[in-house]
Length: 176
Image 1: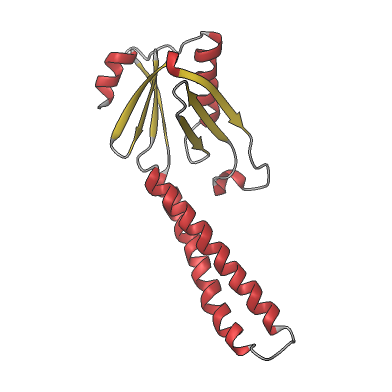
Image 2 (image 1 turned 135 degrees about the vertical axis):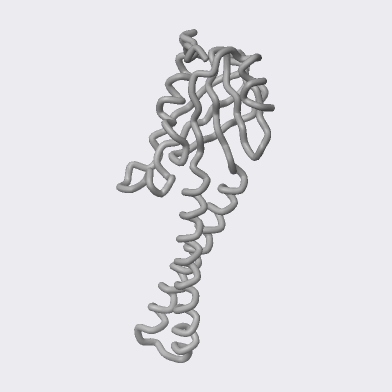
């Protein structure tokens, strides 16, 4: 469904919140590279340290651990990037349109049960890693739409949905 068709059902378009899939892919590539380097250096060190009890086995374990963590996080981000490719949430006067991977779902405000905004990880650079804030929109049918710091203005999105669903203060269109 195209944005214009959703707009007819949900009123005037107010704003969009896009997910930065390219940033997710870049992060996946960095983590996979870290995993590859850790594994590439760790395996020869592990092989060379067979039969010794000095520092080499510990170093080999550290390098292989870094490699394993890098591979795991890289694959996780890669899966996320493909599952949420081209994800965007359009806010309209009478609801939302959730677009992902070429499909769009029209969600009137009446179908939204709850919105939960969590601060998540407060450590430095958490938002840059995509582990900072998250916003989960729960629907009455049990479906959940989850966006994280890779999505533009998730705090604003959560506030708009909360005001519309719980306070009855619906967003006003741009007049297009």
